[in-house]
Length: 392
Image (cartoon, rainbow, N blue to C red):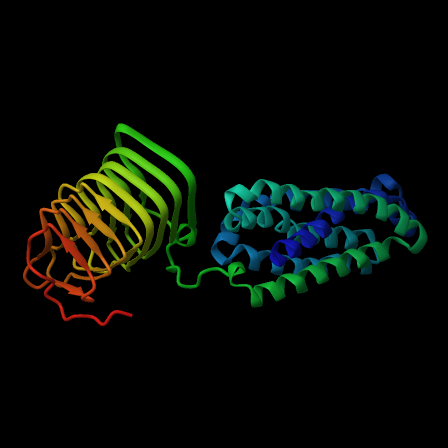
């Protein structure tokens, strides 16, 4: 991945800068006619800001986008490090090192956080190992090159070399930012709700057991993105996945099994809307409903899934939102598809309803629309009352 390679280059340059000044101290002391001990203030100034900035980098990067933040930090670091090479006194060099510590501090930790966000768990450790190798090599290069370059070309040249590396990393990061969608923050995230508003939560390859006593397997109340991938959720007294948001959210559930709960997946939001995509999900033995849309501003799409033994309803519209169901089997449930809220709308296409107490149930003002290509076996109840939708 080119984006990770660009981050590795930025990490290499940032860590080279951490140690380069160590071996440049004799040349700096000679140039300014001071002792090596006095010259060491340039290391202290850098370490002070480089370390203290770690307390604020995370929330700011979450707000504006991690990859974008690293790219900007590299561009600013190219400037501050070049100013180090232009310094003509110990005071000006100390101030430049102080400033470069501020700009460089963002690069490594935010790069690691970005990798954690975008790289699948089963690949993450191997990739992090290779990425951290660039950081270690950067420190080794900075310390060794600082002495060699300083001796042969002067300490200023070393800072100019590091500034050029930072500029090259900034160009590479900027190019990826412009061309690679994975590097850009989601601008549809709600504003004005603090850093949590744009958080992305990814749950993958988990086995969540309630043992018949836990309330909810997953409860999503803060953040903007929830991804549930290849997760097993069983044995909860209320919901397998409970989305209960006060603002907008995107929810993705795939390759997941939910069993022995009251409601498999419930989607609700007080403001904004929930956009949910559910694919290849199996929900068994729900004492209330398999999938429930409980708010009018929710849009849910379910496909390639199976819902069995839902005592209440396989699909339940209780809040007036919209469900688009396709290529999904609902079997041995009380009601297969239940539009139980006025203004609620459910569209069904290529569905397989088998051995349910009632196939379709619709209250006054609600709608179930059919593409006319569904299979209903051994069930009773009214036909879908919406206008037939052409199957595409």
